Length: 51
Image 1: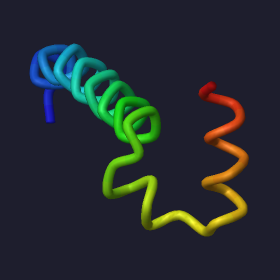
Image 2: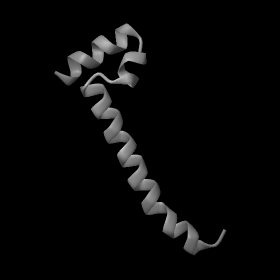
Image 3: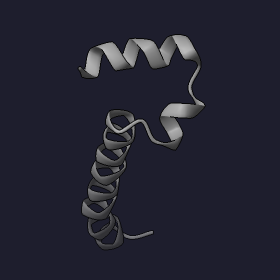
Image 4: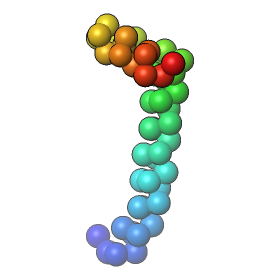
């Protein structure tokens, strides 16, 4: 792989990682599917932190 293709991919990887992080935080805040899959102890901890 040459340097130009690596340079072109890095902003897309950064944007994708940020979008995944925001989606995960929104899921936890609104108690979505990922939140419900977590163990009860982790759910209660996150619920206290988010409030």
